[in-house]
Amino acid sequence: MLERIHLTVIQQVEKQGSLTAAARVLHVTQSALSHSMKKLEQQLGIPIWRREGRSLQLTQAGQYLLTVANRVLPQLDLAEERLRLFAQGEQGSLRIGMECHPCYQWLLKIVSPYLTTWPQVDVDVKQKFQFGGLGALFGYEIDLLVTPDPLFKPGLRFEPVFDYEQVLVVAKHHKLANADYVKPQYITHETLISYPVDIGRLDIYNQFLLPAGITPKRHKTIETTDIMLQMVASGRGVAALPRWLVEEYASKLDVVPVRLGPKGIPKHIYLGAREADISIDYLRAFIELARSTSPDHAMLGD
Image (tube, rainbow, N blue to C red; front, side):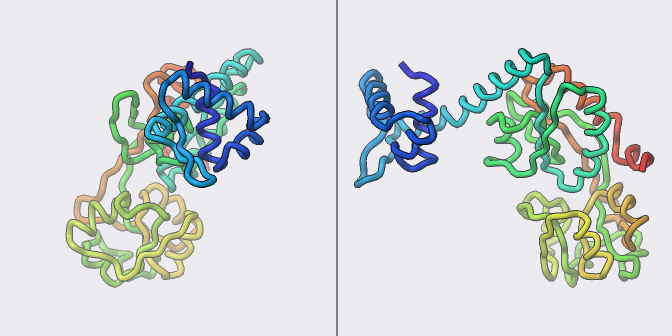
């Protein structure tokens, strides 16, 4: 009946666009691949593909099997990889996904001591996912997710790591530099610089500007923190970042943090993992190390 190779074939035909291309990737003949899939269709009593001209289109049953393949095959690949590492005397690998762009510098300060403590564990960091951070966890693309916006779903566990305040960062010579706090309307004539993420996930929009019906004069996106803060320091715009990060850069660049609103915007960073993996010793150890290394503490070691 249904075997792993069938799921692999369905996935590869969808990726490569044809049976011929899939057969080439899988290192089998097209006839052997076609025979195997026809036999499966006979056993299941339902077609997986329908032919439209020269192309193959998945039927409803085929689409369902493709969904199963995309969910199951990464789990099998991960299981085989971990078992291979166990057999070689290694403990595994830890793949960390980032949904907190400014947390990258903080993360680097954790990775170094972690690698020293766990020499048989490899660490990889990913910032782009096929289906977002939550989907990457469910899809076994990553093992840990660093995020300020957890979604508590069955099968996942999110653990708080540290608290911080989201602030507006402006140049030292900016007119708002000495303000006690910023009101939404003050941003009306500013160029707001942010990371290239959806506006709906930017706290300065969903917790500060949009509730007041305010938008900035211009919104510009920049991928790297260093360039973003250099732009701010040169008076090219303002940005919203964690206070700890702004204070760290304030010793290098002419930038200052200003509170957003009279009460500020409090935030938390969480590490998310699959519940089935939360007890893995090297994953648990990373969470504990992260919890004991808040950004303020990490800055003291600079």
